Image (tube, helix red, strand yellow):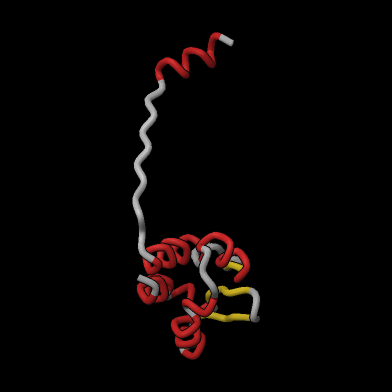
Length: 94
């Protein structure tokens, strides 16, 4: 098809790979996931990052004790208070 051929001819393909650290991976994931109203499941965290929940259990535990997150052992989400202080929560994972 002519339209697809024109797209292929004019397309520039750039591929750069950048290795990121475990901390950066967790930070990026949490930045996106905790902004969702419904939060995130642990299975999605593990599938997307390739990391176990144990990698962030200490941070999550501290945030739960502060009343900023709630965890039902399979799903993590900010509380009403946590939504107000979401940027502070996300800093913990930076």
